[in-house]
Length: 311
Image (cartoon, rainbow, N blue to C red):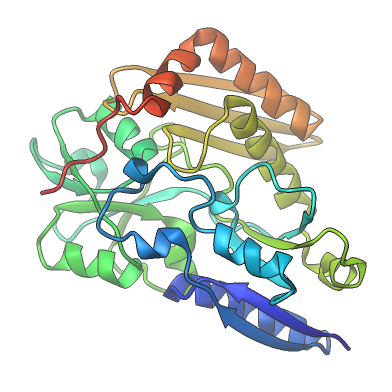
C-alpha cells in the first residue's frame, strides 16, 4: 500500500485530528507519517484573530508543503479552510461531522442566561461576540487565544467568568468537564464547517484521492457544501460575524444563517430549504445581502470594527 505523509498544525487538537486520520489510513494498510507545519495563525498568538484579517491563516503554509510535494494530504478543521481552493488542490474528503454547535463553559454559572451583568466572557471570534452581544449587551467580551488547554486554564484561574468554545474540539479531546450548556443554534449559530474535518490533496494525485475516498461522509459533504457556498457568496473568511448551520431534513437540506454587527446591534437571520447544497447556500446568502448584510460586511472588511479588547 501507499506511503502517505500528512501535513498538520502542531496544536493538541490538530495532532488529534491528524492522528485520527492516520489510524484510519493505517487500518487500510497504508504507511503513514505526520509532518508538523507552523502556520501564520500559530505564529500570531497575542492578537485577536479578527484583527489579523488573513484568509487561510491556518492553512497557507500547509498548502505550500502540499504543492511542493513534501506532504501528500492535509487534515484541516474545515472551518479554517478557505471556501475557494486553488485549482491545484481538491477537497478529497469531508469526514463524518461532530456536533457543530458552540458550548458555554463556566466554573460558577450553570448557563449563559445565568451570567450576572458585567460578567467577563472570553472569545476572540467576532461571530460569537456579535451573537453574545445581541442577547446580552450587558456582558463584557475579552479576547481568548491559545490551544484548548490554555483556554481552559484561563477560565479555571478566574480570568473569565465564562468562555465559549466549539463542542467538537472538546469532545475530541475529552475535555468536556467545564461544559455547562450546549448553546442552541437559535442563540449561537455555529461557524461554517464547524465540527467537520476536511482532507485536502493535490487535484492531480489521483492515487491519493482514491485512497482517501472512503473517509468521505455524504451528509457532512452536503451540509458543509451549503454552508461554504453561503460564505463564498458573502465573501467572508473564518473570522467575520457570519454563522451557518445546515442539516438534512428528509431528502432536503435546511440552512440557517446569520450575519451580525460585531456589537450585536443588528443581527440578520435567514432560513431556507433546498435540494442542491450549492444553490441553497447561494440563495440564502443573496437573501441576507438583500436584507442589509452587505453593509455590515463592508464595515468589517473596511477595518471599522473593534475586535474584543484586551483585559
